[in-house]
Image (cartoon, rainbow, N blue to C red):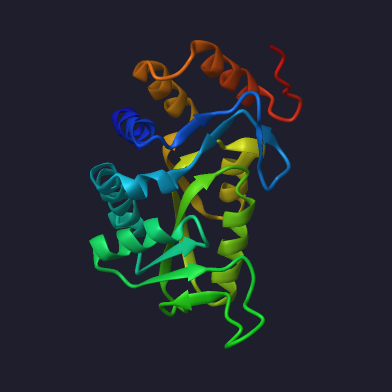
Length: 213
């Protein structure tokens, strides 16, 4: 992903109000890591022009010639609206992957298009440590899919997430890496510089970070 594209997507997130600095009330990720910054890509759904811009870039990344998708998969629940929009834009079948199979009905973990023997690109909203996405990769492979890559709108890349994907044989693409998001936040003038500086300090060592006023 080019630096100009990263800046464009990061700006779209800022303009959509999808980035929150919460130094006084840090959020806790599923991994247990506490964060002074929260990125909520669901805010894009309220801004069609910005969302369309993001979906166009997601679709381009999904359909790159060397690893073009035959099926677009989304991770429940955050990735579903984006993966569905990408599939419609690219005119591809789509599915979504639950965190676990339903205990009723047909008991399926994957809903939608059949993935067996097909190249699948996984679409995510935000990657933190990569755990949930890699669980989805496992589910897709168990269903017979060839998972060629994961494309996410944004990501923190914590605990070596990129390396985990590489070790799993999956290429990871972040449209807006965390440093690009912070640069866009700084350029916007919407946020206090202290909050941005603190977010950079947190990102260097998220496990031992604590906010002291």
